[in-house]
Image (cartoon, rainbow, N blue to C red; front, side, top):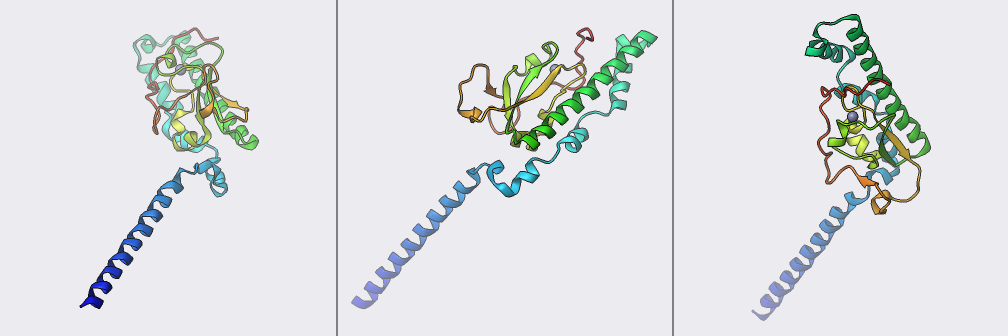
Length: 201
Ligand SMILES: [Zn+2]
């Protein structure tokens, strides 16, 4: 009888030890994904793949932009002047799209991890309702959410600039430099159909 009781107690102790080991292992496993994806060398090539293809999938085509502009009241009586203006808006859209993609492609060659938003040649009044100049994003966030690459809407003057500093921007209080993301998903961004009517420069 005594032996049986000792046996049961020993068994229970073993079970408790096993549970403890199991719990510790779970804790370790939960910690593992916290290692930033971008620091895992094997993942670099995936994170740093050109965002061109993914971005073009989610941005409207030139044809759709033209159709949309032609359907707007101000463009309905499409005179030569309006048609010219539509051409200029589309040209600016394509130019901005290419410039921002190329900035990231070049940044990948240079090992850039942070990018911030800037406006050129003038601030974009549409974007200013959503974020500020100097808000920054990581390369990994761009990989997960290519829609955070400008231009965001027709006539958008926003562009993305590589940050060449070595410091981790998340830990700095550099003036005006604030993360764009307040949590794990991007904040709302302008609808591409919003037209910035600033004079074309
Ligand atoms: Zn804009």
